Each structure stands twice: as structure tokens, then as C-alpha cells.
Length: 137
Image 1 (cartoon, one colour):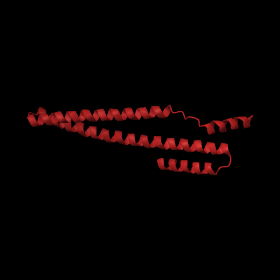
Image 2 (cartoon, helix red, strand yellow):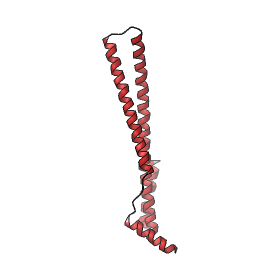
Image 3 (cartoon, rainbow, N blue to C red):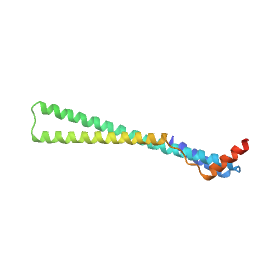
């Protein structure tokens, strides 16, 4: 989907360059910019979703390894090597939980930033709007 959005943005820019009417051309440029922002947001979002999925699966595997280590510990078949491995497993699960939380926070921040984005008007955009408003009167 991202590539389709990017191609459409390029096509819109090409059409804008060939457009003789300034107002229509400005509108096409703004459309292209919006499509490009959407493509960027879609790409970042899919990347973060993939990362979250990978971290979740890794955390599940680490948790199961920790459970297996704990059950072996409680059966009485423990020595210092088992305790060292169990401590390492616990540290690894804690690190993965932290990474998962950080990835989720990054996704939440991106969602909030995308929701609050307000494009800044370029001078030609403001001029085009002014001409459009005057023409409508």
C-alpha cells in the first residue's frame, strides 16, 4: 500500500507541474504532500507492528523457558549452574518486557503525533486559497 501511495503522490506532482491553472496545481501539490505523509505514517506503523509482534513472540518464548527452569528448580534438581541460568533467564525476560513497553510507547507517540498534525500553509497555498475565496464571491 505504501508504494501505491508514493506512486500516486509522484503522479499528482507530475500532473501539477503540467497544470496551467495555479490553483489546481497548488491543490495537486498539497494532495501529493498529504499522500506522501500518509505513506510515511503507514510505513512507520507497519514497522512498529512487526516489531511488537516479534518482541511478543520472543517474550513468550523467554517466559516459557523461565517456567521450565523454575519447574526444574522446584523438583530439587538444582545446582549453582541452574540458578545462574535461571537468573539470566529472568534478566532476559525483564529486558524484553522493557523493549516491548518502549515499542508500544513509540507506537502510541506516533499515533498521537499523526492525530495532532496540522500542515503549515505555504505562501503559494495561502495565495491560492485567497484567489479561490475571491473567485467564489
